[in-house]
Length: 249
Ligand SMILES: O=C[C@H](O)COP(=O)(O)O
Image (cartoon, rainbow, N blue to C red; front, side):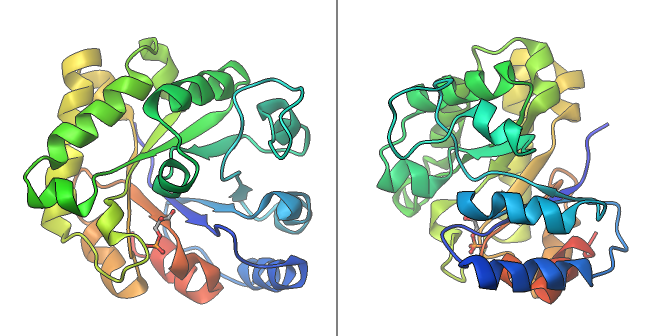
């Protein structure tokens, strides 16, 4: 059975002392929902996050990784290095990686393979741009992103895949997809999975929504049947707001 998950993506925010303050604030929050909770600090702050959050039930995850096992890739981090500090889950394919670092579906397929080969879980992100939605192409874009990066996988791989639908036009803009728009796309994503892998697998995969989720709109978005949680950017930088979203289930 799929899980409810709320993951905070801290992006390139918070130096060490700000990270310590946020981690400390997180330890003072109370979870009243059944959601799995994850936070993704910057690479230099992962180790500190593990130290502070151990025994809290909050999982520390990474925002990105390289596909190679090790070697001459200046500035990059591998799955095995992430695992050595305790990371078990990595976000891949975020639209900011696609836009600013030219990450393609083909590259992302390699990263997904590397993460799974290292027994890591993947939060795989995708979503259409505003122009795609205006031209009615949002489903075709999302379908191709999923197919190109994931449909080479064996069915069993989906035990370790979490999907995150993030319409680019809703990220950091304050403009959220309506709960109905999110539900329609999540249902389409699940059908796309079912057509390829069958309904058992499609029904077992958690599909998160990301894009300007806030305490004020989380409950309505999470109430939709195919929305299994959220990937939260800006609102995850305040512990109270983040836990209000966690507890919106
Ligand atoms: O990874 C998180 C998403 O990009 C959403 O960011 P946001 O909540 O700031 O819109």
